[in-house]
Length: 419
Image (cartoon, rainbow, N blue to C red; front, top):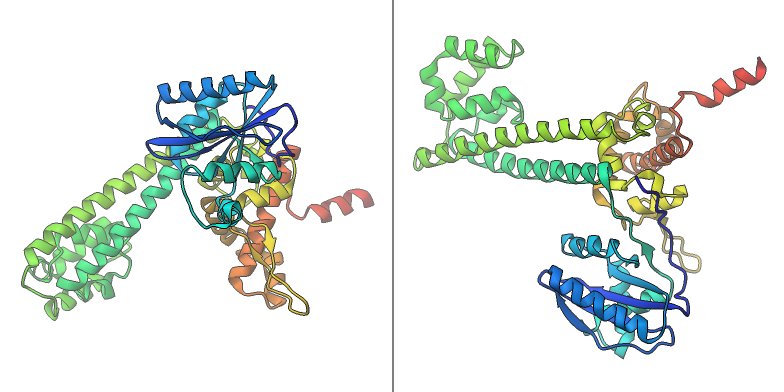
């Protein structure tokens, strides 16, 4: 994996052609500016190989006219529409940088003293931001890290789809059998899904009877549920106030949703197998896994979302990439509350947050620090966010030093010194 440090771009040199692109789905809008401030006319090019080649030829001609030696090309941090172009440009002699869309929005009104937004104006605003030095180099994940990022994002999308389906399922169940969820409680377990797929109506449960229902629950739950739960479900079905009109159509949809949920669960398991497989190819993965409370899936997701920890030089860069850097709004005697900026990768923050819940449990590696935050009066959510920052800092340090986590490290060091 190539080590390409992400860092803030300094002001454009006198030998640099600045090119910016406003990304679109079908067409992009390009623009270039010479070191002396003169610029070319904004131009459009298609999101295709032919369009990319035409754009690059135009850039090369502009570079040759002024005998310039370097090309810096900038974009807004954007979605998937820019990725084919980024990978095309990676093969050419060009430095890629990105700007925060929030900066573009703020600076837009300064150009022409107007909030006007057009495809012709946007690349010029991006160029102004880069000219001021407010841009970061683009790091494109490669090899194993790229695979981990795609797998992590696919897993997250699958989980989101499943959550939507779970909510739809609960709404439909409430129509025909509102008492069902008071008995089974957890819709995510296999026993509940089996019943919904095979006995979704109150009449189905009553016809099955307590004895057979008990056998079914014992088998599906592997002994965790038995006669007591079967009797509770049976009595609930006997007294159900669920609707009868249109019931068959609702049952048809319930069975389909349960089948889709099962399919998604299988797909997620396959994704996790691939994540574990690729994680083994990352040399420093053992450093992260040495921390009690962080499993393979979390470690794989963190590496994928960071885009290789080796690409970062300082902890502050890592914290900022996650959007966990702090800010406050203060003026005069007023001192604002310190908050995280959230101007980073949201999925990375989510992974860290859930990992923090694991490491602050009783006996966890950061349990004492979490309790210390609570004793100072910090709300639980803010304390977990603080632990997320600490956790990310520790992970970065372990990867940087290629070392494993040692619990009570300071105490161990003191004992060694005493010896």
